[in-house]
Amino acid sequence: MSDESLQEARARRDAAWARFNGQKKALQTGLAEKSIPTRIKEAAMDRVMDTVDEAKAVAKDNIPVIGGTLALLTAWFFRRPLINLIRNRFAPSEADEDVT
Image 1: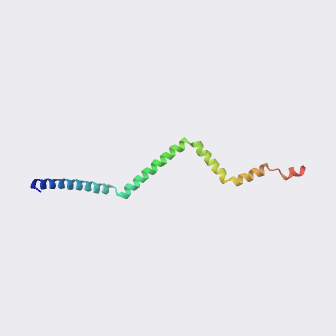
Image 2: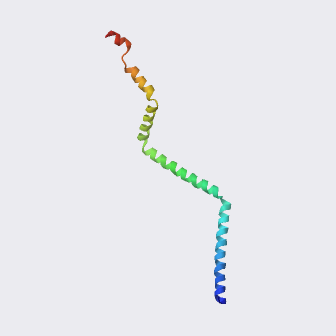
Image 3: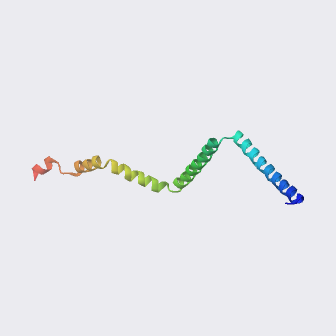
């Protein structure tokens, strides 16, 4: 290698080393402000809040569907008491059966 090419290679190396040190310093400064777990937590919370906001918007647009679904689920959970109530209400009483 000639002396000029060696000096040029050293200059490129020094420039690359300076860029690396600058990036390293920026990373250290950024991590001093907020740690990686804090950044992950904040990003996750942002996604959760976005999802909740979107769910609220969808629910607001579909109130009748949600109401119908809740009514059907309630009827399903209380189906046996409802069936017994209907049977008792509309079943012929014993007094009616004796008259005939």
